[in-house]
Image 1 (spheres, rainbow, N blue to C red):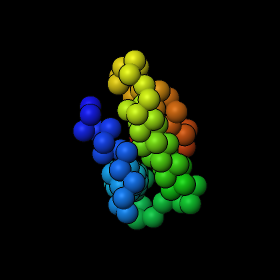
Image 2 (image 1 turned 135 degrees about the horizontal axis):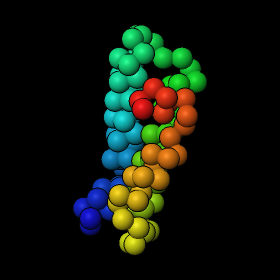
Image 3 (image 1 turned 90 degrees about the horizontal axis):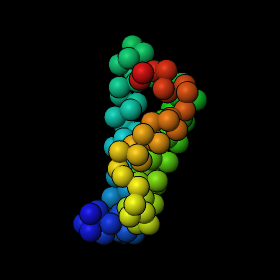
Amino acid sequence: MHFCKKAYDDNSQNPLWQYMHEYFVDRYSIEAMKILDTDRLDTQILYSIRLYCYGCVGMTREWLMNDNITPAETIVEMMFHSMPENIRRIFF
C-alpha cells in the first residue's frame, strides 16, 4: 500500500494517475467499439467514458491517500454503481 501511495502522490511530468486515466479510457473505448461494432464512438459516450475513468482514478487516489478503513471491495462496488447509465448499458 505504501508504494501505491507514493506512486499516486507523484506530481512529475507524467504521473501514474495520468497514465492510468489514459490507459482506462483507451481500454473502455476499444471495448465499447467492439461491443457496438463501430470504429468511432459518439461524443457523449466518449465523454462519459473519460469522465468515469477520471473519477475512478481520482477517487482511488483519494481512497489510498486518506481512507484507511473502507475495504477495496466496497470502493469497487461504489465505482460500479456510479458508472453513467449510457456506458453501463454498453458493458452490462
